[in-house]
Amino acid sequence: MRSMLLLGAVCVVLLAVPAAHAATVAKIDTTGDPARLRYGPGTQYGVTGSAANGQSVTIVCTTRSEPASGKRGASLVWNKLTNGSWVAGAYVDTGTTEPECGPTGARPGADDYPYRGNTGVVDRWLMFSGQCTSWVAWRMEQLNGYFHNYGWRNGIQGHWGDAHQWDDNATRLGYRVDRTPKVGAIAHWNANSGGASGLGHVAYISAVNGTIVTVQEYNWNVDRGFGTREVPLDRISTIIHYAAGT
Image 1 (tube, rainbow, N blue to C red):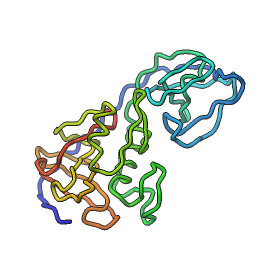
Image 2 (image 1 turned 45 degrees about the vertical axis):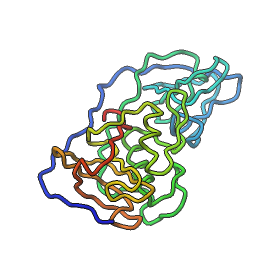
Image 3 (image 1 turned 120 degrees about the horizontal axis):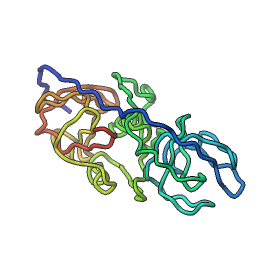
Image 4 (image 1 turned 60 degrees about the horizontal axis):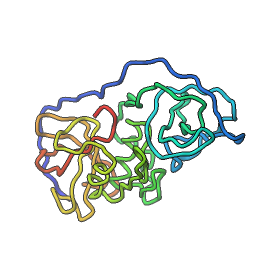
């Protein structure tokens, strides 16, 4: 698909990173079985290891995601540990005053997509690699530390699905959806809008200069491949603020 390319100066804005804070030391408290550790806050994320009952763990931040039940009752809280893994709050012996997890501080480069050259397979976010949705899932994982097609937030399970569905899913999960572009946010096109197909389109916003938005994307001008372009804001349907700090 063809799109308008406008040349102009680009102002790059870096994502804010929260100040460091003290971590919380807690213990795994189960009925005896080890607690599974995962690479994201929910059971849809792969297992990275386990922690034995009574083992000390260090919590750096939390988020409210998929409900889990354990010896200590039910909880929406998931705790991020110092090794980057996550454990359900229902398996930890103490509450935590740790803040909501913020941005990772990642500074994405150009085409660093892990499925480059391996398109058409089901990726780790349960999307098809080489598609615009898979590319943006990768960027959101880099910035936020996790992303999943069926990810939870505040006890609600979402489904990102095809690109044209992303604004509705984001709204349902409580993410901000508006018309204000920001570096790190998601540019979203409705079906058959702004040059997109009937499936819609999503892209990663890498720079903003007034009403000109620079995006990085897959499967637009290059079939299942990477591209970047400058897009007038009025050609974009909505902006989705998934990543913390955007």
